[in-house]
Length: 242
Image 1 (cartoon, one colour):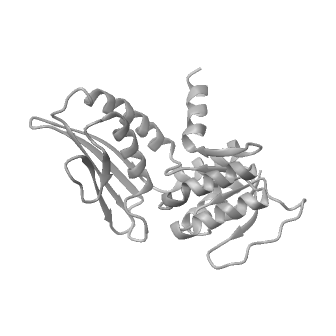
Image 2: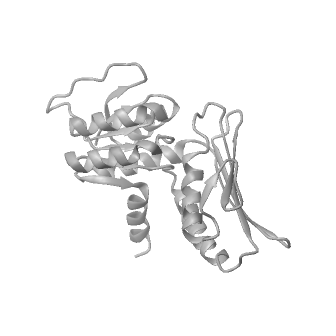
Image 3: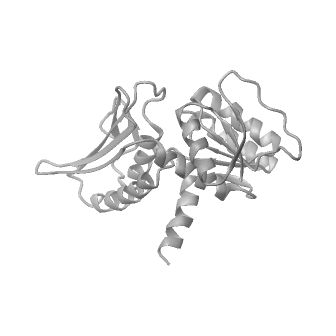
């Protein structure tokens, strides 16, 4: 697989190392402020992997669609542009895959949250909250992973209408912290007057995100449409349970 890396920070460098170790080729890379390379038929990558900043993601994805390069992105914090990118992707016959978190462990955690919240839906005495902590350089608050987690909870807990960093009675509270070099900690708490149940995920390093991004890129080749990592994960999950 020939990979074009868009963003060459810590994640981009990790992806490059693991991709090469797995026998793939990084044929081009571009970082913030750099000019994009010119591709011909021989040099055109099979797929791009994009990890940049929220304000850059939309333009990067639209540019990949125009170039006919499938792109998997792990950049979060650009939700207000997602509908535009999705519509443009479908219109132009492109391929985009978005993940708030490429970690296999987090996606298993999402499934656990989905199951757990369906059980708690029958017991109105339980409230739910989300707490997330990331490194001090992370720009968006709350994290994309926390927003995705809230989506699973909102689908099942009908007493909540939305999530918020400053919640009202019908909103799920998300507390966001930016501290040091924390890779990513997420905690969902279900609490009543008599007990508390906590479901947590803590990332030890970025390797899990990079491995997931490479798997997503492999899956995206030769596809058309706008996808989420749940599409990839669902296929992996189905195969592992046969």
